[in-house]
Image (tube, rainbow, N blue to C red; front, side, top):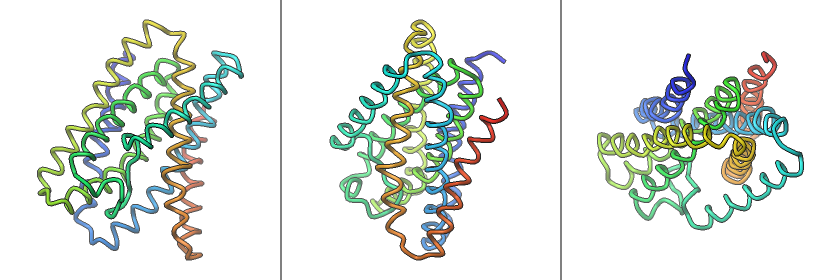
Length: 247
């Protein structure tokens, strides 16, 4: 299968597919929807960490020196910290979010930027290795579904109709396809950048998992819920590990 087709298929699954998957949950009652979001966030946390530590970082180390890769990861973490401070990168997985309660438009713009970056990351991962591209796409999909569920809920709470919320989220998700196309041609032309893009990708996954997702999970203190979160987190890591071990 041509590389471009691989990238387009999995980018579409990670963006538009996540929107479709998330939209079905909007018909659940709030209590059930919120419980499901927490479990999906736990699973997404595991896939993000697994993809970064088991997939992206080892592949980057194969193509560049450990010091260069480590420095790029560190720079990436600092970059995403600054982006979060500028209210561009952070996204919520709940209805009542201090960042997003100001306007639904901010969600659409922020998600478009985030999805564009996801598209470039998927393209870079596939150009490095098809298996790594699939691993990265799985992590993106697992993360995007609960994110979009939260964004749908915020848009509805802001007064948007279900149709408009779906339309605007779909438009923002389409930015991933643009990012994938540009990433494919750009990184293919400058192949030496791929290990550093993978390092930045790993930094973004690690930062999202540790700064955005895990703190939210820690708000749950019930033992039963905490055990379920741990199980889903390990399951997320296990999903990525299965792909890696098949290599």
